[in-house]
Image 1 (tube, protein in one colour):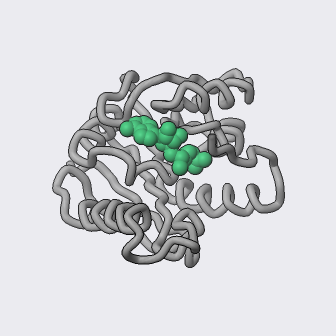
Image 2 (cartoon, rainbow, N blue to C red):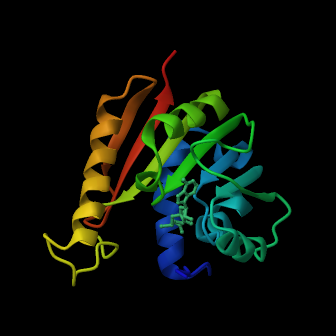
Length: 187
Ligand SMILES: C[S@@+](CC[C@H](N)C(=O)[O-])C[C@H]1O[C@@H](n2cnc3c(N)ncnc32)[C@H](O)[C@@H]1O
């Protein structure tokens, strides 16, 4: 099973702060209720939950959720479920997809995200770029695993740029290996 470093290492603090800088443009993060869809073993939960009011995480993988539970923060709640049919009601000021968006069915996932989003809330999606180590450098075009991952990433990015339920208010690269989108509900 894939497991991530959840410590407050200099690298994680750097990654946390560049995400926080974006979130704080749109919300007062210390007052925010946050949902992370595809929370995994809680890498981002351990970095962000201490800084907000409430942090809920949903994931399909019970083993990863068990690891996330070990973080043991009072304001962290974890649920087994899918992004396509969220087991939570919200409302959330922030809904996060940290490297998980490409794994989900886009239409139902976005509809669910909008359902649980507070009226002025934001959705932040972070995804690997096609230069990410997530795309194992040993894999090359023509390899079915590589091609499927590339297709998923490109489909996800294309979808976000054309869908109609939310406005795309900001997007860009974090660096060569990570990109992001910020979305708000259309009013
Ligand atoms: C690459 S991991 C990212 C985990 C975490 N967000 C992070 O950045 O460390 C993607 C996570 O999405 C979860 N996932 C996959 N499909 C999902 C779905 N349909 N609904 C919710 N979570 C899903 C996986 O179990 C996995 O934990």
